Amino acid sequence: MTDRRHFILAGLALGALFLHDAEAGAAVDLSPQQPGRVRTRQNAAALAAIGNHYRFVKEGYFTVAISPHLPPTATYATDARTVVGSDADYAQLIADSLGLKLQIIPIAWADWPLGLSSGKYDAVISNVGVTEQRKEKFDFTTYRQGLHGFYVRTASPIRKISAPNDIAGLKLITGSGTIQEKILLEWDRQNVAKGLAAIEIQYFDDDAASRVALLSGRADAVFNPNAPLAYDAATTGAIRQVGTVNAGWPARADVAIATRKGSGLVDALTLATNGLIADGSYTRSLARWGIQSEALSRSETNPPGLPKF
Image 1 (cartoon, helix red, strand yellow):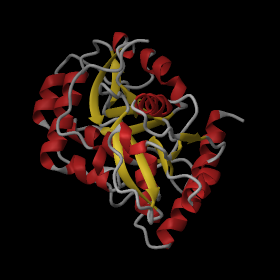
Image 2 (tube, rainbow, N blue to C red):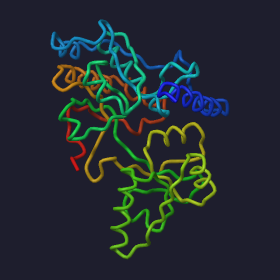
Image 3 (cartoon, rainbow, N blue to C red):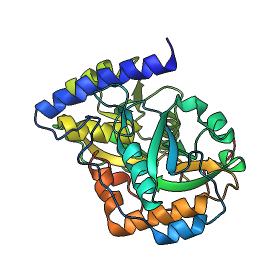
Image 4 (cartoon, helix red, strand yellow):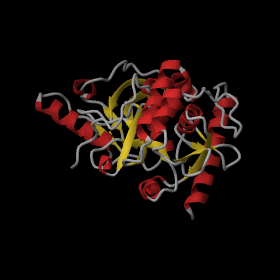
């Protein structure tokens, strides 16, 4: 199956799921028209920062690559071809700030470095985390916190998970071989060294089985990337957040726009993002998808990222 067909089928399936949630009472819009999308005006400072330093891939357009893999960050709309989600909304706000039209190119996430390096698009806005290795080839403008979230069933007695001792003795769901698994294992190691009860980690091949385990009480909490869980909590009401941890723990690693190294575009994007934060359109846009908890107070250009391993 081609990547394009895979994404279309995934989008249709996810669209059906979340439209069902909308019919149950949650305000979810997966239409291609996106009438509620937040817009903004041109940012003179951002435009001045570009000057003659950068030539856009398509004149008059901000061409952005997005991988439509999972809401709320990005998925296909109900027409199975229009990319919608928080990343698409943010891309539109940046295009508005630069006085340009938006062109979104759907991609497989693993293809973004080659496509960006070869000049197929101006930027990648697709949940890309800042790392020191990536900074050698690309410039970054941060636009969202890189968070993993702890979520429990709504009726759970657990109120807060914010430190290693909070997970002692719990049954936790996470992904095998992931950053979040590494965090749990390190927290567990610290707990056991202090004489606290060890955790039990549960792994599942599909999200449906994972959710059944959580809602039935066979697991105490799930710890995975925050955005999809926050969206699920907002649309279904079946789970709730009890804590978040930055993906770079114990350091910090945020999500950023990626552009070609030295292209002359990154400073303008950072100015534009901080303008969006200042006028409130940034927070309103994230709130449409239930992930305002991931908002940054300030965008940065090429901040410290995850270290090389």
